[in-house]
Length: 389
Image 1 (cartoon, rainbow, N blue to C red):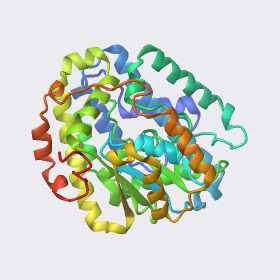
Image 2: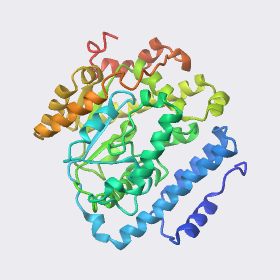
Image 3: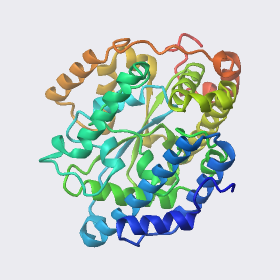
């Protein structure tokens, strides 16, 4: 390493000093931390400000890991609490996972994984006062500022404080999150081929902490990146089921490239180039789909329910009826009304239009579809609904 980043030993020592705690739990997180630091140094053309932000993110996760272990040591009963029939919404990104997850989060029978509680899990939130939890209020303030400074973000993503969100921070406690908010290509390659079983066991420990004072215990996860390691989730969540969303990859891939690029600092995008970012994201997502299809075949069809993006956009309540029927849950009238109200608020185009092209990222529609030929021929995507592709 060049010396622009602290060593692992330095980071761990500082975390112990900051928190007064010294138990990080299982040591498997150290490998991911080493790989992330090496990749930051080699791949990310960050200036001093962005390097400091990356280090601050790492430090927060180390502090959170120490606090999680301390809390679970003080409350050992929580580590054995049941988690019943969790659901994970997966698929390519930009295929409706956020909208579907946000709508299902309105159902109080599910426990959504909210962004603000992930960023600071301790102390676990309490149902009776979570509306005014300082972590929640700070998150809302930060998103309001983001949308004021960059209104295009509202057209690209739905930012809601109380809806389930990608578990980047929970997986990040093990330094095995996808971490597409950073251009750390060698880390991404390492992560794609990694064994996530122990990581998901730690993930479940954190979920049990978070549900300790905030029921229910039927978790609703929304994480397109789960598709890379679907089978690795079963040790931690043996009765998990997956709602798998589908959309023409020639639309989903450049849309995601556009969104990810918007999260990188502008000067970093200029240094790397949008074409390089596009190629990296295309290869990354293609690998994820190959791994997902292999896992689906191994796990069998009963764990999966497929949702077509085009149909969900056109008839969301019809699709949700089918999802709930598959889950064996009656869809209550008050939940239907909540879904309808959410849909009215977030109708297509209500927050602006996300404009992008494949060519802007060095990609071609025909090439993307050719690369995804196995997926397109699998029958999982309804090409008739997508206009025949």
